[in-house]
Length: 347
Image 1 (cartoon, rainbow, N blue to C red):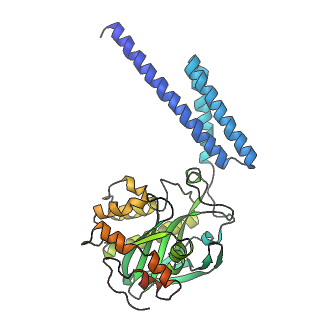
Image 2 (cartoon, helix red, strand yellow):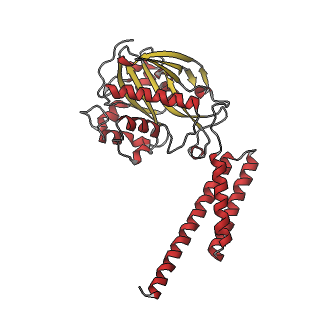
Image 3 (cartoon, one colour):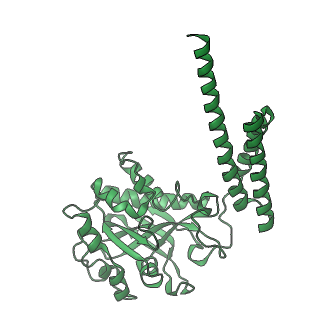
């Protein structure tokens, strides 16, 4: 190889490295500022000041690196990043905060043969988003009588985003619904951006459908769809126990919620994928959970014999839930007309 050609190649390589380094500095400038804004100790003014300081120092380092090819900037900025990441990784999750009432408890389970006793099953009586009767109950379920698993998707804004719930039905007409949710404090509200920056811990809620479904359909007026999943009995049992294990683990070791990597859909996907030995493909619809039904039908996860349009049309339960309201047979009535569901026994 001639010397001029070799020089040109090294020159091109140097340009590529400088461009990638500049992009990395810009990325850490934004990420670090947001991390400090959400998690730095102190009042809001201190958080804003620290975030702004980090952004300014990052831009100074970028200018020095690009304009002057400064070796000092190339050495010091990685040390700044390392210090920031050390601080970030040391921020502990906690189970001891002033939680909002609806996430005050994470469900806990005790397994005794086929029977599972769940402590802190939520059964609120909702009158409005801020007016409700608090009830946490202990309930026992017989996994030998586990008859069905249903997926519920609740939409409140965009067709691409939905909250995922999984409801387990038993031969005696009982249902219990599991939901992976942010564990917000009493003064907090949900933030997609905050979910990237350790703003919320993660919780597993188990609830009566007249609570967790009705609050979405009747109180918040969300659009909720119910689908019967095509899951064999051993896998149903394994999925139920996976929720219990996950909840028990969170009670012992709290974890942070993450908008993409640890949310209401990806956690459920991880549990099911583990049960089927990693056979499920990764897909963008696991993040854009509003489109999850088209993914599930592609992997034969719904009761066969129905098109996606039929499943969605028959699975729209908000109107039925609003008509049923507080009726004792709420669970039966919201399933009337849902494809793949035989008539349920009267309670």
